[in-house]
Figure 1: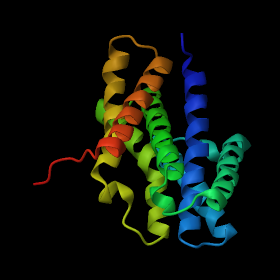
Figure 2: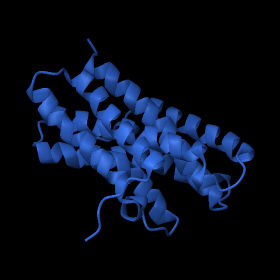
Figure 3: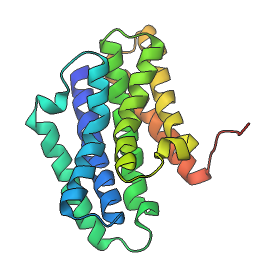
Length: 205
């Protein structure tokens, strides 16, 4: 049996390291100095979870524990190392795309878990999952004066929405919250990696 607290802790740690690395690599790609790189890393890692916590009326976990900040710092250090080693277009490198997909999956799953624990409606759970998954990256894009990826790349937010959408029926049929969190992460990761591999896009109108 997967404990809900353990599943949340693992997904949260994975998301923090992955998104901090992605945000820092964005800063490196944009030619920012070390301070700017760190700011982008922390914002990408902590921004989505902060918005999520404020929505459900609780003090953001990043302000209650040094552990989250340390995980984010580890991701930034990892990014600095990768930035020195990756050749070519950094933002199209697997060094960015894979951690980004993992971070999206992990954070969308934790957002779904928080929404479920807070007793939100199915729509509310989808909202918390999506905002947790894409919020930090969108904020960092705005700081870089870029259109957020969630608006440029239609199959980026869609996996997060799908991950949030599987949580209510999963818990309704009796699946424990820990297992539901892992299921949501698996759905998001599979869809995002599929989109990267096969170029999936939503139809236009």
